Structure formats: structure tokens, C-alpha cells
Length: 175
Image (cartoon, rainbow, N blue to C red; front, side, top):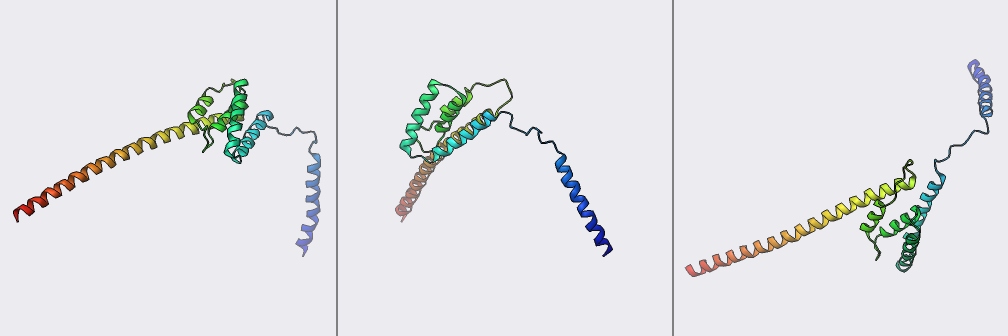
């Protein structure tokens, strides 16, 4: 019981210390902001743009593609380039062109200042698309090899069938 009273006496003291410690912090302490809020906003815009594209019907996507392509021709800004790349990599569209998207990413001007979120995004997309192209090429090569092997199997099967027929004919002649 005596111990319980000691704990109850200490509890208000601890609470008072915590409240005092919180009050001692200066209020005008600068908050931590991202290094470049404009670029972060651009990344948010890009992700919102991509999300909105996924919800559009094909006819509307074609209209958006034409508009974004025209905007890029007029103004080759980073955001216009990123929008065009996002459209070019959309699956199941008539204008999908991974090669052009990779080209646009590689031709993106590189700044000498530290990498921004948009530049990091560019690097990520470029490496992912390059890997996708490599894998697509490998799949095409393997598909061709499978076709070649199927032809070879058919040729061998027809040779086997011809040999079987010859054996049957020889056996029938001997009878």
C-alpha cells in the first residue's frame, strides 16, 4: 500500500515534467519541407494524370494523346515530356510505342543540380522500359525457336512415319 502511494505521488510529477517539456519547445521552429515542393507537385500531377488516363475510354485517350503530343511539340518541358511518355506506355492503345517512350526518356535534358523526384522517375521509367524491351526481344526469340523446333518435330515425325510404312511394306512382302 505504501508503495502505491509513492507511485501516485510520482505520477503528477512526471506528468508535470512532460507538460513543461512540451511547452519549452520553441513554436517558430521551421518545419521540414521537401527539397523542391514544385517537383513534388509535378510528381503528384503525373500520378494523377496517369490515374485519370486509366479511366478514359479509347476514343478519349486518342484525343488526349493528340493534345499532349501537340503540347510537347510546342513546349518541350519536363512535365509535357513525362505526360507524353506516360501516354506512350499505356497498354492496349493504338498509339503505344515503347521505343519512342524510351527515346524521349533518354533525350530528356539532364540537369547538373541534384536529382529531383521527376528526374528519378525518369530514370526509373527508362530502366523499366529498357528491361521490358529486353524481355520482349527474348520472348520473340524464344517464340521463333519454338516454331523452328515444332517444324523440326513435324519433319522428324513424318520421317518416322515413312520408316514405319516401309517396315510394314517389307513385312507384308515377306508374308
